[in-house]
Image (tube, rainbow, N blue to C red; front, side, top):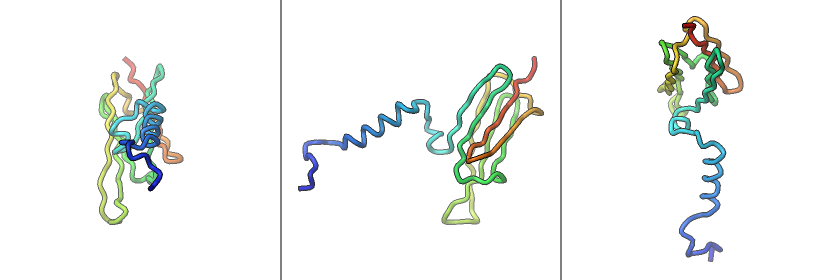
Length: 121
């Protein structure tokens, strides 16, 4: 015998780990898991976007703002084909227009931080 209960239809430890992950971060979306994770914060004068981009090079990141929309495009080199690549894109739409001339970006420790200033009325 292998020590497992033949009447148990599932691995309870696996289910327990899934619930723990779910309740630790219930706001994780499908895109966070399949493209790359994005977190959003808002202050009185700005929106702050943080994107988790593990193993990404700074020169492979492109950020564009158009009105109320932010797009983050990342070139993703496939490991088995170093000369081929595809792109991962996340787009965020904000409830207010963004000042396209006043954007601060910083990329450190695999985290891209973008500060987008709200456009004055």
